[in-house]
Image (cartoon, rainbow, N blue to C red; front, side, top):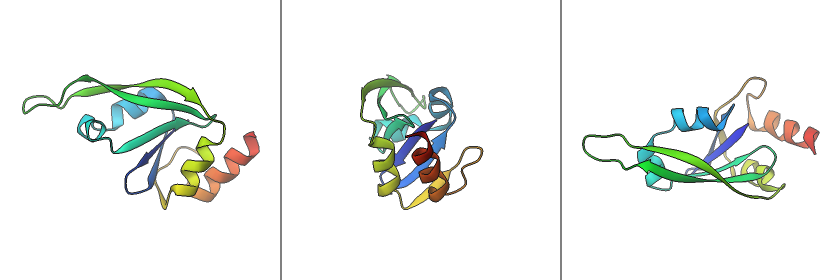
Length: 103
């Protein structure tokens, strides 16, 4: 599961890196509006693969960086709401419980 925390402290959940890359807009990535990690604490850095222009919406990919097992819980603590869920996780409390169960 991928966690994407935006600048407004809204947390979005995705089933996979590929789903996050498909659902999010490259212009927002270019503007550094998200931080990313997975549920195990692997940090991802967004890298633009096609620039945004007047004629193109652009594209990006998520590159694994380093691991911090506490990172998912940091994202949950920063988040003020869940903007997009995955199956079985409908709110921040559900996510916190899922993360606690995997520790």
